[in-house]
Structure formats: C-alpha cells, structure tokens
Length: 102
Image (cartoon, rainbow, N blue to C red; front, side):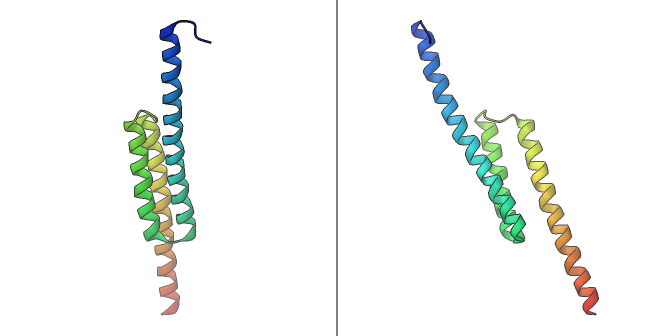
C-alpha cells in the first residue's frame, strides 16, 4: 500500500483511469461483436452501418489513449476486409444465380 500522500493520490488516479479504460475497451469490443453478428446474419446494409460505428468507437478509443493507433488501424482493416469479403461473396452468389436462371 502507498505510504506517502502523493503515492495515495496516484493510486486513486490509476484506479479511475483503469475503470474508464475498461469501460471504453468493453464498449469498443461490444460494437465489434455487433458488427460480426450482423455480418453473419447476412444483412449487408445493417452490417455496413454497424461497421462504421465500430470503426468510430475504435477511433475514439485511440483518441482517449486506450488503444494504440496501429492496433485500432489493424482491427479496422480486418473488419473492413471481412465486410468486403462478404459483399464479394454475395455479389458472386447473386450473379451465379442470375446466370443459372437464364
């Protein structure tokens, strides 16, 4: 346990920061999970909306100092890649079903 007054104050500040960082990180992960669930459901329009919100939350976490900018950039890149892959497979599936119908 801290002995000096300044060490006690530092401990209180660290605890506040830890709680705030946990909340921001948790919210960010929640939005990323929402995007993944929406993407799996196949609703690409809703997936794009949730993807943009997830990216916004990642950027906010960087601004608050909770995540490193490269960490957020990596996450956003992977999320967008998953989204584009789903869009591409949906386009391929629709074009192949159109071709078989002709």
